[in-house]
Length: 415
Image 1 (tube, rainbow, N blue to C red):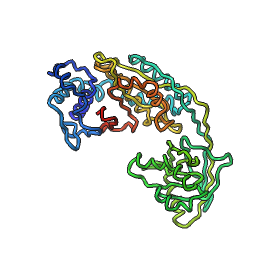
Image 2: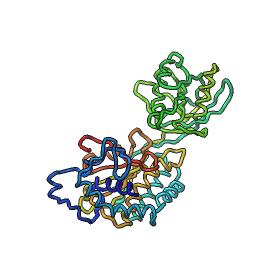
Image 3: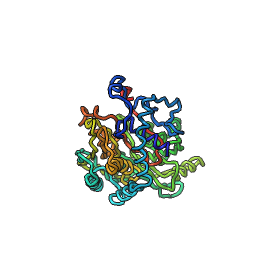
Image 4: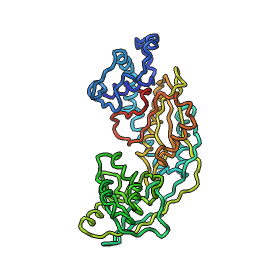
């Protein structure tokens, strides 16, 4: 409990969020004199909570003034923690998350379900007393998954479960039938480049220890396969655990390199194909995939605020993306992120806690449709001159699990 309180207190003081109403014994003249950023003495990113202090491996050097200010926030933080763990707010975010995904399911870019979910969240923000609630229109791509099937033809017939990647091209209408080359890495592919021309390239890469490091095979698989003459690629799903379940996700192409169809197959099928090849069998697969790119349509980024009472023009953003992939309900990616973003503001409203700066909940649209989310990119372009008003922007989009710290990215000026 004490660890949680100190960690939350550090975040509050870092961004001047909560007005505790207590005397910090810090004069504004002194603050102006040293002109310190509130967050400059905090530990760097991903600081784990250890013992009575927020520790960083190199040290946790906090000035006495900053320590005193952090301690002064204890009553407000204790109130927040008690309300979340034992009060009426206990389990509320989880319950609302369940209701949201049950009501709307998959919320793929361009879909009616996405727009219905946006209408719902706008209404919820208003009902929970947020200010300046509005949507901001964004032109987004409209993706619809078509027919997808693959079958191992030799040395025996077997259905291969797969999911196409976005923005992969489809196969010709009649599909593709070709011999197969299974490789275990990009280096393995390069070593076997002379065997690759005209074949379907199957990547059976090992789990690389994390999603981010393994996903490079999904992201660049089509590029690397096409570079050596592959006509399509099937990639082992990016997961360390599988129950014959394929995973979808994003991928990329590069200029001047042929765009070939790309899909993910299950871990089990990738390993089967590898074992068959290693035993000397010749592999042949038929593969058909149709993807429909419909005309672009209009969606919305969603905003709701608690207006700051001292620095209303300075913003702290809490955000997640409201869209999802089309083959699941997107509970973790990223309905969980959107719910905790709005619930944080609802909680402060219910407790009557005021803020120095304006807190803004932001629900980005069409994040999954591009390497940089469409909604985010549109906002940055449209509000370029206003970005300096943000003291910080948080996004929860790495899974809604136990909170262990914060990733920080920014310029030298920012931190």
